[in-house]
Each structure stands twice: as C-alpha cells, then as structure tokens.
Picture 1 (cartoon, rainbow, N blue to C red):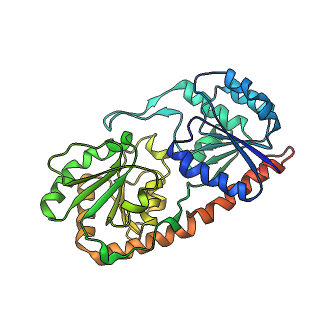
Picture 2 (cartoon, one colour; picture 1 turned 90 degrees about the vertical axis):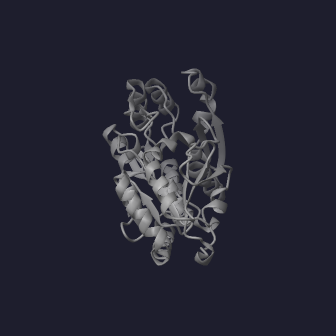
Amino acid sequence: MPELLVLTYDVEKPSFRYRIAPLLDELRVRGWQVRVETIRQREYGLRIWRLRAALRDADVLLLHKLRLHPLESRWLAACNSRTVFDIDDVTWLSQPLSVESAPVPSASRLRAFEGMCRNSRLTLAGSPYLAARAEQAGGRVQIVPTAVDVGAFAPADFSRRGGGVVVWIGLPGNLQYLEPLRPVFAALTRRHAHFRLRIVSSRFPEWGDVAMDKVTWQPGIETLVLPDADVGLMPLNDDEFTRGKCAFKLLQYMAASLPCVASPVGVNTDVVSEGVTGMLAAHPEDWLNALDDLLVDRGLRERMGRSGRERVQAGYDLRAVLPRAAGLIEQVAAAAGAPAA
C-alpha cells in the first residue's frame, strides 16, 4: 500500500478543508495510506529533523502551502525526492490590511516560495497566475483548480427565491473588498424594498445604511445559505496578492445556481463568462448597474444561474478534478528520476 505523507500548518484552514482533504479521500479510495502531520511555522530545521524517518519512508510527500526556508526544502528533497508542493494563494506576499494599502513584499517569503517550487518534483497550482510564478521560480507545474462538490447543492428551485438577496461568503480578512461597495449597497437598499446583503463570515461590518443579514460561518453552511440567495459577489482589489486568488467562492455560488458579479481580477475572468454565467464589474457604477439589472430581471438570474452550474459541473466539480489530481500524485510516486510534469 503506497503511503502519502502530508505536511501542513493547519488542517482547519479553508484551503486544506476544500482543496487537500477531498484529494486525500480520493487517494484513500485508490488504496493509499495517508498520514497528515501539522508542523510549526518557526521551528526551522527541527521540524524536518523530527520527521526525518517518516519523510524517507513515504512514497510521496505533499507539502500544503508551506513556506520552508530554502535550506529546509533542499534538505527535505534530499530525504525524499518525490515531493509535491501545493499552492492556492500568493504566499510570497503579506495580504494588505485594507484596500488602500499595497501588498507587503517579503524577501524571506519570496525565497521560501522559490525554494519550494525549485526543490519539489511537482508544484500543483490553483490558478494560471500562480502557475506562471512557480514556473519562473524553476518549478515543474500543473494547474489544478480547487474543486467544489456540486452534488452538495441541490438543483435550484428558482420559484422560492425572492429576488433581493445578494450574498458574500469569506474570511473576515477579505471583508475589506466589500468596503468600497458600501455606497452601492446603500443605494440598492433605498431602491429595492426587498434588498438584503447577506454576509457569511465570522465577523461583520456595521453599516447602518445597508440592509444586511449576518450569518455566522460554520462547516457546510454554504449548502444552506447560498441556494436561497439570488446573486453571488466577489469584489477584489487589483494587485499582486489578489491576482493569485483561485475564485473558490465564485465556484460555490455557481454550484448553487447563482449568477455572479465579480471584479475582473485574476482567474475571475476565466471563471465568469461575461453575460452568460455572470457579470464583471471594475468600478462601483459597474457594480450598481450589474446588480440593478439582476435584481429586476428574474429570467436573467435564472439563465445565468443554470449556465453557471453547468460550467462548474463540467470543469470544476470534485468528480472532474480529483481523478486528475490523484493521477498526478501517482505519477510522482512512480517516477524514478524524470520529472512528473
């Protein structure tokens, strides 16, 4: 039975729950034994030394979003050359604290990212932007999007939707991208009697001029609170940090048969087919016009919602993505000396 050793900082992070955990389930079905080890972020050297025997024994090492020192990633590769580095975010920068700030460059983070790519046999990148940066760093790269379980969302009953709920789901650190749209949401509150901004997170803005539903995030909540909404939102700044995002919330919206309005940043422009599955909005007036159009046109919402679900089923469903991702892991296990990609 082949063995996969997974190293991660936190199994509770969304990227592990939605991206890594389903892949591990797929590999178990294929007969793999899976071991997950949580390592500490600042125990340089010691964290590798403690696991040296397990590192040597594993058939494949899967490194989830790690930022190891270049000497550590080289040491790890010396212990076991069959390493796969998985990345779904811009780890070489620190996220800005507000939309008025630029991403914070970090020489040490950049060196760590480049070392991880260079010293791994294969890098799995969640978006073309991340793949291009990994290739620039010397990595051998395959693009594997973060998949969504479309089957977890029942086919939409559009007759039960009221037409006024726009929804955003995400981590509290990303609420900053909603802030520039507050005047838009305030205007929609005044224009549409049934308008509600539904925010699903662990923290919420206090906007007295916006009609808002606050839903505390918990595992699986998306399958309950997305299907009875009407439009999904993904605003972003356009900067080096956001260009690496993998649009997972858009995929969740589309799986729930919601039309989407998103900023034309990074992979958003690939996921959203303008006028077919949603709309792209670069400026506040674009957001206001797009949401106005969708809120007053039930037929448009339904057409886009159905098209979005079909698009996700075809290219981003677990059943489409996981077999390919697992196959790449198995290629690495089988490789003697040549790169897997």
